[in-house]
Image (cartoon, rainbow, N blue to C red; front, side, top):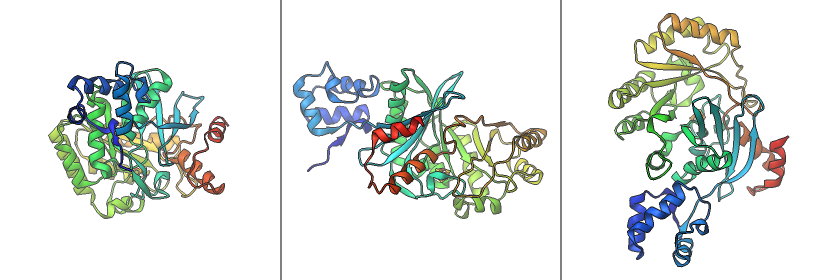
Length: 366
Ligand code: SF4
């Protein structure tokens, strides 16, 4: 059987060209695009101003990707919601909604799993299964916006996966998400996080986008970074920082450095001094994150007092630094942990990838 075309991953121009080729009028493409990317419909029959014949043709030729909500956990502390979404091939991915005064922010996954192997991360424990398509990245945001009935204003690509390892799909996703004919989310309200894939960082700087780049730094020198992140064996800190400087020069967007504090590993005075030295007078921002412990690793979270001390040490050196507020502490804090637990449970029950919706809904409310 011929594979259907993934209509949600197509730009308006691509869709227009395709439909004209199929004998449709140009304006139909704009109507259909608006149903998909503004009204966020989940099937072709909801497109009420499209004739029945055209809808039948659409169903035959195109696939309209729509994620299935498998579970949703809601924090009783701050209203953060963690979603598990099922993909059409049986995989599940995790997305998070965080509610701030300035608006609703969604953290999305860019891959199923991850192959980067960061030692503190639950998303990488089972490796990479596959890349997500632009439609599958978009639909995490669309389904959450529909679920809460409120506009999503900010997006962070910081969930499972290394976004720059799924480069082409990431760029298509970003262009669709910021398209004025779609949700039209401001580029300045989007952050892409990378563990430091240097060639792709240079490429990203040339895309003419105003997206914030966040670098997972997590160490003040190469030796410690290598113990936490295998990617540090490929690219030295000097190379990674040079790529960050280039991004800032090309886009004017200030880099965010993410620094997860691990007790006894990277949270001492020596590391704070070294970090200040490394960063120097760059126009940037450091985000301190008390590492979220995962049971498969023996990393311990730096306690609140030491996190504050570390922050003060950096401030003394005139570094722009904040401590990331822990959102949804009561609902499987670490990135990828909810998904990991769900997958382990499936394996235990000897299920081969099928998604048991009722069971998961029950688990989610436990
Ligand atoms: S921290 Fe990010 S890049 Fe590293 S393993 Fe986890 S998902 Fe992958």
